[in-house]
Image (cartoon, rainbow, N blue to C red; front, side, top):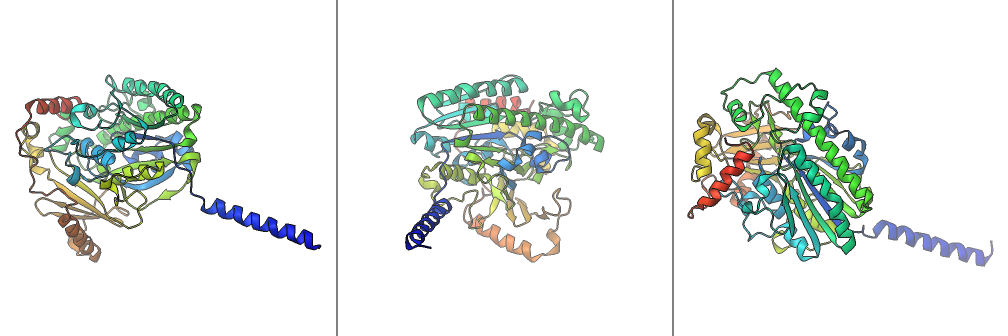
Length: 469
């Protein structure tokens, strides 16, 4: 081999090595847009992609290799306001204080939409949940926000119909987009009609309004195994319809040629009791059926598709995760906040305040009067996840300890066994409590003069959602 040829080969080897190094270490390009979809009241374990036996999510299952799937994602509370407030602020309910006793996210807290708006993003929210009226503070930072009204399926159809025009406007103006969508199809009354018969349901489900729901939870109405099957079929049929919505969202993004520039997130704010702990609906306990939620993320170009994250993660990590993946600096309050992919091993928690216990507000008093038996049994609770275990403590000092990996339905309380893992988790809980991670059980909410108009709005909203009648 001549010296010249050897020299050429050496140069080519060096160039190749440099190219490989660039490919390996060059940072991934940031997403230009983000579409955050909250399927209100969606349980992870009723989705085929999470192992449910019914074919409830065929599209998501077929496209599974495009998604980063979190199999242990937890809501911070079992109802809308605190959960969405935590999604938007990256803060626990003890910090943002939007929960029973004060059903409002105050303007002092910087939301994800506000941060992105200051960075030139077009911020759009389309929601079907009545809590997304301006009275409750969740629309902060959205320049364009719509509360869609009407029958269940009609609301979802209206929302989907707006997607092409929103994306066309963004493309025309060369903007970056933050689009938030909230769908209510798996909230009582379930939007089950299209697929109900496919899952063996004839007519409407047994429990279709708030009054009947609370009667079951208060043990005032018998709810048999057959009833649970019937009601579960209606819920599953609604989940199946959400899968159609997911398919349509992805189709529009693909047709508009922005899918591979977009961070797409499908999740939920909380789950739903379907009678397995003699509880219907949500917002009255911290069983896994109300806290374990789906979390699916598609990166641009389906990067990291097919990966599975099994460690517990919290929805409080969503806002910093989104900002990091858009290349947007975090606000000061989130500078050191854990992201979804935080490697520091910080704890995942839930903080539940009961509207049946806090009787300082007109709304809460009405609930306690309507359902006195329920009021006697429901307690505020704190939750800490420690590895595969779940610690639950209520305001009376009662302790529950479940291994949710081996006992996902929480049938066996192991608190009396004196396990070392539980004692270690208790110590961690005490540290978190001292650090203000949880709302104090003694706190009764703001004691300022009540806004009577706001309380009437709250009651009307709860009536629209089926919580009161």
